[in-house]
Image (cartoon, rainbow, N blue to C red; front, side):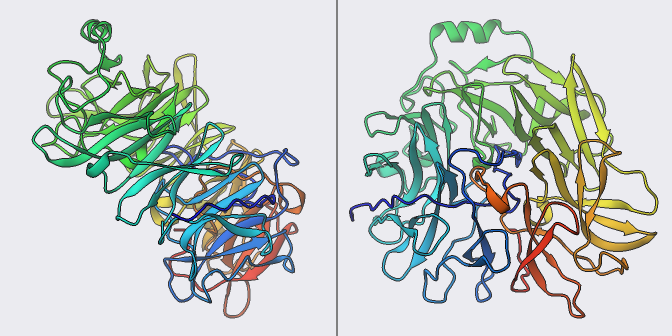
Length: 529
């Protein structure tokens, strides 16, 4: 293994939306970022699809002006350098005024980089022998944790101490571990979804917990194994088993004797909430269609099913403050069920009344204004107060300038973003009674404060050519902190108003006058991945 290199310069960060937006646990959460926050930067970094390989990227930087926007660095001799982003596993992280990402080069392979937003201030942070394809970047107790490939084709946990400039490789699962599928930090621990060996010697998914050292890395359970069997390190205590036996309906149910550990854990669902790891999985290996909510204590003990057996098909885990929101089915009888929004504080489950639309294709988003539920038709601001749910439609109610459908990441990347208290989204739009396609909208959290933000390809005449706004970065591992000209702005791609519309990068304060065209982009068929 080569010695890791640490670059000391301050770095720049950015994301599709502007100074705000972060990848969230399970729900695509967004976060406003105040201007001038310590550790912030004045340049945004964003990936742009390659013209040669649309599923890969080149990294660009901007200071908010056209002349200050361009390729960060040619890492790979004219070929795309940044790998595809995987759902919940984006290899992009901002923190402490630095920006970290994996990029390919002929000399080092695909390794972890650090940058200050300039070519001169960009270097290799960690060089692992071969191409390591770093993923799952997270902060853990002040250190940088990530998964990476090794020369024997395993993917292991690595922890980099930025102060000491030391790299620790942690073998997760020994010979059983050939692939880490997801990771999530909870407090001072990190959970790893890897591989384990069952009592009959089968190699299957397994959950591990680590304090960032080899000695402090333990198996929590192997999927589908009996609780109390020989393959789990962490065991429930007798008192917890008693609690489980005496617990009323719809309260946490601690797994103990005669139970089996969950199977088919969904890596995208790994969520930190109330000092525990929450995740979605099946309780029956023969029934893979009904997802149930489980959790594990920070130290890897006390594995429990969180809800009653009648609450299944849980989706969209989204944390807003001290509440975990999701939707789920609740059985009425063997033939019927209802689907509702739920609020959960870790002990008490609250169920909404009927939602105005179907929830099957909905997305949940955490903002400073609370929970938003986005369906294919509308945007709803959701509140839970005094034990009651409310769902306020963000539809403007104007028959001339209105929207008829909302674009969510089920179509193309994250398009619901908060910028300093203003929520931006993309919707199929009608202007003066004419359908004009997909345009950029904004809301302050009320129907009266919801309006068309701008139409980049024809703001004045309202022709029927879609601007088709898209994110330049679908999801960040966390929110970059920015100041200067890039603060309080939204960064996105859209078509311009030339005779043959061209795709450009824009930065905007949400008004036509405050919108700057930064850079012409390749006419990408896979934007916002």
